[in-house]
Image 1 (tube, rainbow, N blue to C red):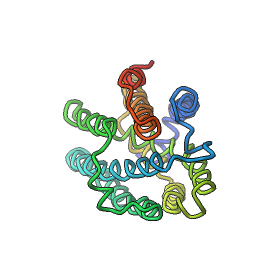
Image 2: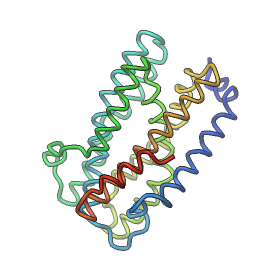
Image 3: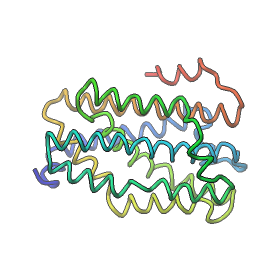
Length: 248
C-alpha cells in the first residue's frame, strides 16, 4: 500500500489523533506542575535543564534497543517495513550527540551523562515498550509513542528552545534546534504515521492506538512531574506522581 493510499484511507483517524495530541499539550501545561518551566520561566533552573537533556539522551539511547526489536519484528512479518524502519533508525541512531553537545556547553560531559541512573518514569516508559513487544507480540506501543513524540516535540520544543536560549545564552540549545529542524525536514511524523497505520484493519486497532497514545501521554506527564519535583522542589511526592499516572 502506498503512502498516499494510507493517508487517504486513514485521513479522518489522523485528524482525530492529531486533535487529541493538541488537547494533550494544552492539558499538560494546565495540569502538570512545572510543565511550562522551560517555556515561560524567566530564571531557568539549571539543574532542571541539565537533567532534562540528560534524560532525553538516555531515552534516545534506550529507544535504540526498542527500534532494534521493532526491526526484528518487521523482518519476520514485513521486510519492506523492516528496510524502512532500518533507515529511520539509522537516521535517529546518533541524534543523542546533538543533545550531548548542548550539555557540554553548560559543563556536563559524556561520562556524567551515561553514568546517570535514569529517572523512575524513564524506566517505566521503557518497560511499557517491552511489555507491548513481549505480551502484545507487536511494537504497537513503541510506534504509537514515536508518533506522539514526533508531534508533541514539534508543538513544544521550538518554544522551549527559544526561551532557553534567551535565558541561558544564544547557542545554548543549538543541538536541540538542529534536531527539531532535521525532523521537520525529513517529515518523520508522516513516516511514522504511515508505518503505524499498517497495523490498522479494524476499529479495535484504532482503539488500541489511542489507548497507547493516552498511556504514553500519562507517562510523559509523570516524567515532567518527577523531573520538576526532583530538581526544583528537591523531593518527590509519590502520591502526586501516582495521581498523574492514574488521571483519566
